[in-house]
Length: 183
Image 1 (cartoon, rainbow, N blue to C red):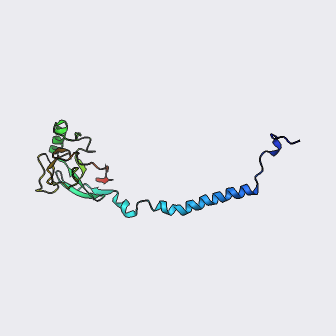
Image 2: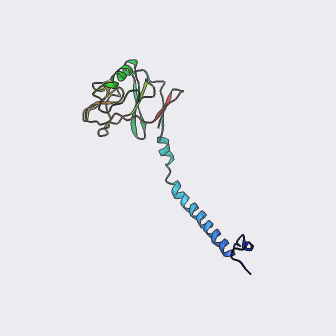
Image 3: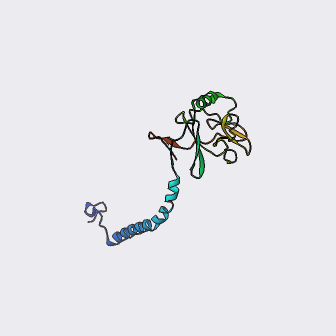
């Protein structure tokens, strides 16, 4: 007499049809993965785009008070080696009531001496003046956007004009070897 709960049928016997079904499914899954992988891999950034993702700049030749412009992700980045007077003024203005987008100088720099900001006005995307000697630097000695009259201080904070936000601080790392890695 055969009992439904009998231990004689355990483990259940795998039939040839079950084996073919499972192996066909596995081959289909592997085949789909192999066919789809080139499309997924094509979504990764190309080598030229990855090369633009970071910019390394040697800071050694920059003198105190000097500003340079480098390109990162097709945007100008302003790097300034600030003088002790500029640092003191930026710190003194931390609590100023005329800061449109309040931020302390310490929150915008990783080292008091170095200021790194994206050189694009936050109003309409113009490039402010103030990088070259003789450029208009605005009332606070930072940058001046002549298109609509935005004035930035030596910490890149908006002080007057239609710009709603401070100049953007990009992700960067000051290295011990005298370089900065932006990005």
